[in-house]
Length: 299
Picture 1 (spheres, one colour):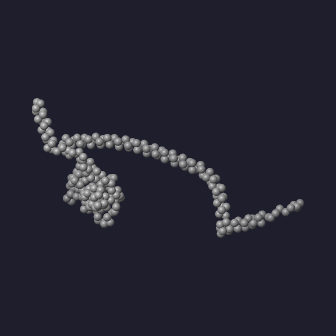
Picture 2 (cartoon, helix red, strand yellow):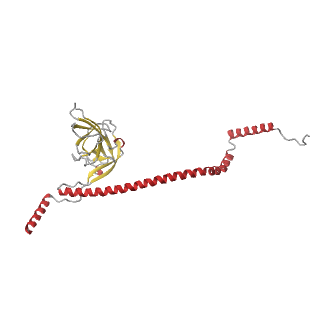
Picture 3 (tube, helix red, strand yellow):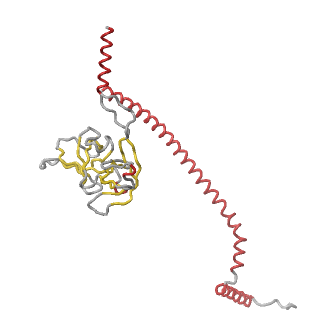
């Protein structure tokens, strides 16, 4: 039995119509950007759903990161507290050692070492001459800088002031070939001379006998001789020792502990004048004589 009403267009015609409409929409959207506004509205409508779908993942990530960071901060805080106690204990020991040192020096009638005044400086320029290891800093005569003043970084000795200007100064580094500094081995006190080699990572030690007790890894510190550098500041560490009997002296190289190739900020050391006036020997002798007379009178 045939239907009374027609069923409409066939599926093939519908497919062709849909394809034609799709191609037309694609063409108008590509060439004329006709649907940008509609796409923006649709994106705004869909974005809350995207946030909601992504929220569980973000919450899990946030919770995991905060737990890890909190545990890490707790461990670091505990380490800092332990280090603080350790440094406080070292500070107390240093204070006691300093007081003992002053008492011993007073008993031996040796002058007590003056406090060292420190000044902060920044590098302005580096000498471009490859055979000259010198830098210019932003401190000069107006700041109290003087020739021969020792310079160091956070690790050890860097050099000394070579020339002083009004507001800037030139520093010669310990690696300069014309520089030398008296040092001693911290382990056993053997005295050496550390001369610059023209290389930033090497110092030369000449005229060292083969019998000298020097080992690789020994730390060299300032000996205080010569009056330029205070005693006890790190200078370099021995990296090469060769005792060749065919040569008159041993061959010894060391590497500066200061980061000479990365210098930016430095400290300038100078002896601060002590406010305490020490009594002269004549006064001490007179006081001693008076004490002896008083004891003799009582007896």
